[in-house]
Length: 251
Image (cartoon, rainbow, N blue to C red; front, side, top):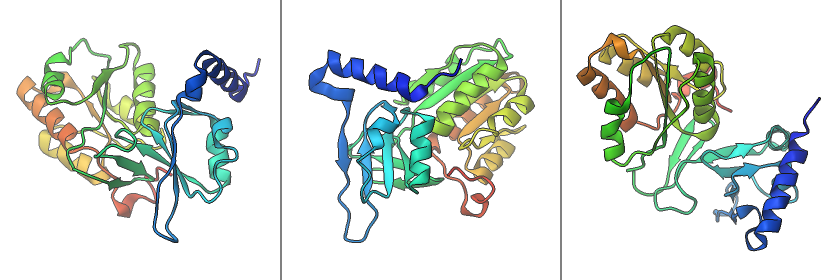
């Protein structure tokens, strides 16, 4: 049986609108003011972006900006691509003083530079508990979420999806770093890195502008691990170096 994703989305949105007529789809639509001749961006705050949200709204628009974690249906993505309209991910709330937009591997910042991108964490093929390594990050105000601990394939896929599509940064702790690296880097928008020491990890992260760090927690002590994790998160978000964008494209 073939599922019509767009039809399912339309039915869900219709039911939400009927239940909350004063907040149809929970949407906020804003066309950012730009100088004459500059690109115009349509800002959408819906959590689900379907083809229905795009039709009739893109006249004169060069890019569509959606909130971090928004789900974009395949038909909506194809529609944007066919109309040569780029997709931007917002890492801070719409209209906020520290809004950051990640677009095609290039990061543009408006406002203060003290943005803490959301972090998604996964653990697979190890019994190690990441709570101690994550505690300093949550204490510093970072938004940290964990995917359910299950098989390596499932955990890697969930983190890669959050990083590649949702604009988050990721940490994956596993004893199978080579397998996880290979799987994660198949996902568009993911630039995963790993290494054997703080120096090699820092070099790998910088080389590709990594947004996902994969570590074997049993291979290093707690102090070293906390340092590596802290440095990776504090330095994010990173962008793909211009010289490698052709082969590490996020578009």
